[in-house]
Length: 158
Image 1 (cartoon, rainbow, N blue to C red):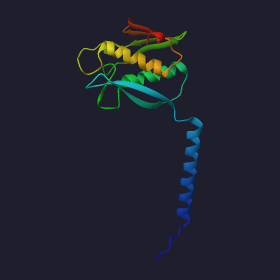
Image 2 (image 1 turned 180 degrees about the vertical axis):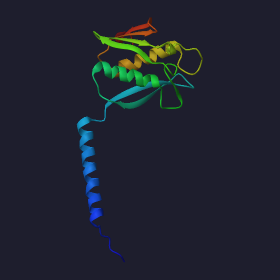
Image 3 (image 1 turned 45 degrees about the vertical axis):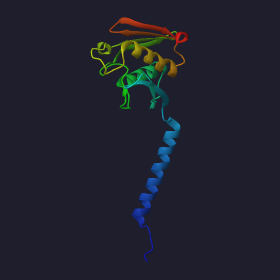
C-alpha cells in the first residue's frame, strides 16, 4: 500500500488554493452579493404572475432603479413567462424627483404583434407592481413611451 505525500509543488498549490478561497470569501463579505430584487412576469398560458429573484449591483438610488428597469426589460429567465414589454424595448430616460418616477420607454414598447409580450394594460400593471414592490421610495409612476404619457399611478392606487 502506498502512502500519500505532497511534494513541495503540491504544498505550494494547496496553500495558494487556501489563500484564494479566503480572499474570495472576504471579498464577498465586504462587497455583498448585490441588492436582492423581485421581478414579476406574466405566465404564457394563464394570467398568473411568476416571481423571479435576481441580485443586482448596489448603486445610487436613481441608478439602482435604472438598472432594475433595464433588467426587467430584458425579460424573464423562466421560459414559461412572457416579457413585460416586447424585446428590444429600452429606457430612453428615467429620473426620480420628489418620490415621483418618470420613465420614458423606446418605441419598441408599442406592441405590434399579439402574444410575444404582455398586453399593454397588463404590462403597465405588471410594471407598476414591480416598481412598487422593489422601491419604497417611489410614490408615483409616470410612464411615457416615446415621450407620450401613457400611464400615471400613485402607490395608494395600487
